[in-house]
Amino acid sequence: MHIIDSHCHIDRVDVDKFGGSVDSMLAHAEELSVKEFLCVCIDLEHFDEVLSLAQKHPQIYASVGVHPVELEGKDPSVDELLKLANDDNIIAIGETGLDYFHVEQESADWQRDRFRRHIAASNQSGKPMIIHTRDAKVDTIKIMAEEKANAGVMHCFSEDWETAQAALDLGFYISFSGIVTFKSADALREVAKQIPADRILVETDSPYLTPVPNRGKPNSPAYTYYVAEKLAEIRGVSVNEIAQTTTNNFKNLFFSN
Image (cartoon, rainbow, N blue to C red; front, side, top):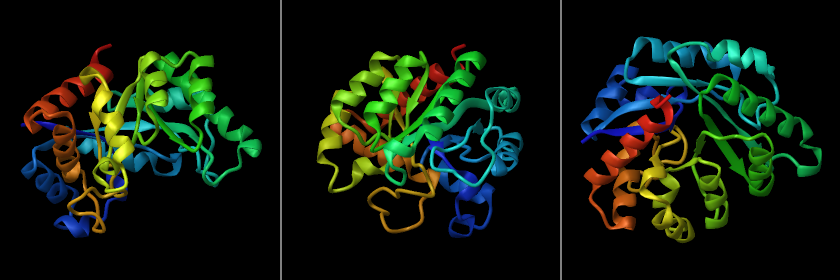
């Protein structure tokens, strides 16, 4: 069995909780059949660390982007994103998107502008996007459509079926995290039943959002297995089938060009 964590922040995982090194953390993940990882950048101040992980470990890929809630660091231009993305280890642009949980919609023009720049970098580079949306589903889809975003993934999806359908119609994939295992996520599980098999991905978003049965403990990419296990239960298929399907989908999204 081969599972890919399509979204994690390995540079931020407390490796002391998983054997004391990145190598030991990756070995732990392999014990649970999680064998490849997309380490996602959220600010340029730590981009070199993210890229270095991908350069040192052939099973780790990387992205470049600035998260919508990052305020203190560098806010890149399209050209700057393109320059940083011009590396074979960088397979995606993001994570990017909109987040109105901490920022009022009315005062978030800077966030929407940043999102548009990331979409432009994705379109020009041909590298898919990793999209974060929180309390901003309408504007997220609206800007994706306006800017002709056409390749990527809605990461850590926790929205309704209408939003999922709109993203699917734009050609995007839907990725589920540990949230789908939470007791409170019945509505999300209903959405997970409906996503076409060829558009579904799995992730941990580690070190955040640890899935059941380890909720409340530190998260690791290894626990993508439990997300896959829950999706298999929801969709009435085997874990092996979810593993194979999501691995194929990851390769189709990020390596088909």
